[in-house]
Image 1 (cartoon, rainbow, N blue to C red):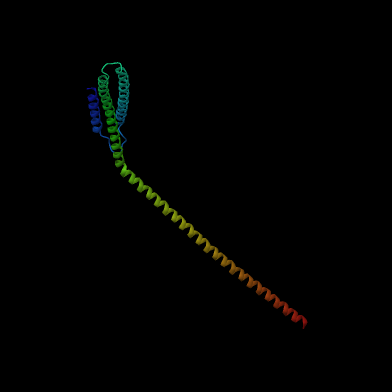
Image 2: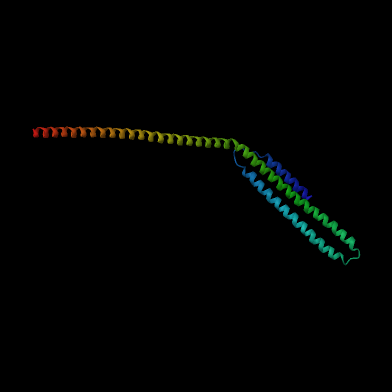
Length: 199
């Protein structure tokens, strides 16, 4: 009877947990989390209790079987002990199985909640991904524009440098021609003076 009431209570708690709505986009309701924690602790306690009962039943069986050796109907005594052990072991296994069932139900609910949250957050993740992609694309375009601007600036500077160099070369050629013209004029004057001085 005790085991039936525990399984009934576990079923009722499961139904209550399933009925608690959790708004999309929010975390798990703290009351639901607390319920999961309590149920998992209870499941662990039931599993531990089942293991202890089974171990105790095995200990009692070994003691009673040892006591049967001094009796007249040894096999009958051992059969009775085995039946008693089987009843106790069955109850222990049932308790352990109920604990396992509660644990599986909680894990299933937790997995369902994670799935629900994952689906609820899918649009936000998609929007975040698009935003990151847009930022990356904008950064790439900005880098390309900056590179193009730097190259254009270098070309302008190179053209300006080439013009300055050409202007400097032209100025140099002009000065060379002027100098050569002056030298030629002075040479001519000197030649004329020396020609007039000789006559």
